[in-house]
Length: 376
Ligand SMILES: *Cc1c(COP(=O)(O)O)cnc(C)c1O
Image (cartoon, rainbow, N blue to C red; front, side, top):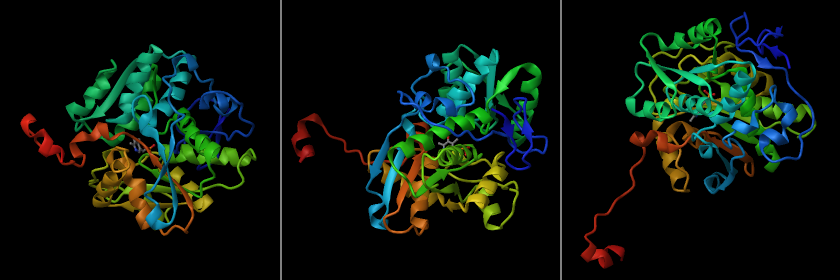
């Protein structure tokens, strides 16, 4: 499959990571038929641009679509795509697995990424699984606590002092020179891996709306591409309306969308509790804007207060997600969706990764002698 630029339309035969025009590249859309098989990788075998290295799979994907009561008050049918059950507790594993399959096939011995949280842990884990070395570049501000969940898998964690925004582009450049395959947030194989979320949803229901927590824009592009390929293959009748959800304190894509701009601008002084979606200059921001314009999709931003409230509500349903992953539910209140609409919210990552900011439940102290009265 060829790579094409979603902005200028140029096609590339070489496995480049970005177009000369400065924008991201993606594989040409595939149309065809899924197979009857076991995992999402097998069922949609022809839809991937590289053969998934199934022997190294950790069981990523094929996550539950959970019916939720949280939409009742608003009169919508709400479903939660629970990506927190992936091997390293976020959807990043889907993209990491496919990008790692490519790196292995292409003969790389070392892979890398630029991240502080979920993607770092995912790449560190899968590199070990695939028998590859990992170089994980993190920002100065990354906490020791978070980095433990990365280094435990054996990846080499490198704390880089300097402009974190430049690190994305520097890593791609140096990676090419040094033979390190960087699978950053919107790497083309990563995007392909995320298509599986759309495939799995479409196997179960025909959603009207899909709410997608959005930072770099990689997840949004992946889910969009998945639904578009199903539509162009004649496997679904209608495309759902996709809604990118950002935190108010860091919403470069929503801001550009509201102002009707074709290009995002850097969001100065980002500040939000939803750290996993706080990229102030998303590398796929322009590509997401283009999709929203072409398909009539939209963008909503939500406050930290609303995010925490949504996180609490989800915990009340037995699902503990991190703040970034609660934004979809927070957005529900802001959107005036038609009654009876089928809505899917993507729960992107587990709350166990962000225990520090988690809402506290009540704890009762009880001496054993008083247990009877404590239980009443
Ligand atoms: C990475 C991530 C996102 C956003 O994905 P992008 O591809 O960067 O837009 C959302 N939620 C969680 C928990 C994440 O780890």
